[in-house]
Image 1: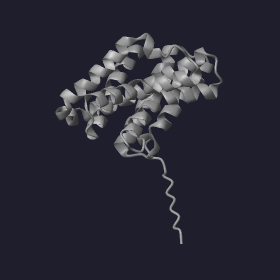
Image 2: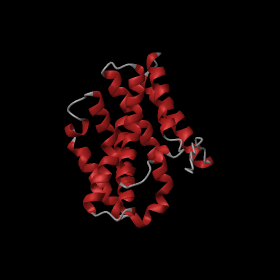
Image 3: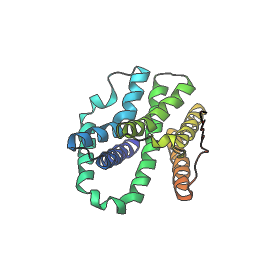
Length: 204
């Protein structure tokens, strides 16, 4: 089940990356690169930081083909994307949770400290979006008060906590998805945001 959600998630993330590239008038190569980094960049950064080789997607070339195809598909159906906005918000939330759990699993399997396990989950969940926004010359959305990284953190904490208590894995995953979806979708609907730090220093 987690694998199926992962495949849906990387497809959706690749499409959001392609749309971001389109807003910057990139050619098809640029679209493909941004789609790839958005979908698989988080896992790549995680594997490099944890010293986990070979990097996951190099063992699954079908994942690369899927994200490139999804990016190109986004170009072809871009005129209809506004109608699909809610679906993409839902798939993006699913992806954030799935990436976070997978990232935690990777670090747990390597016997890292719980803090590193949590960071591994968060990096997997948000690093792809950070790379996308940086290459598209935007301040990453996760730094702009959105309840996104914080949702990843809470999901990771719950997952690690239930794992430590030896709760059944499927039950643990279900609880994480319930919490993550509730928080992320409610935050989007109600406009919940983190407080912002606004510093201006006028030189005289």
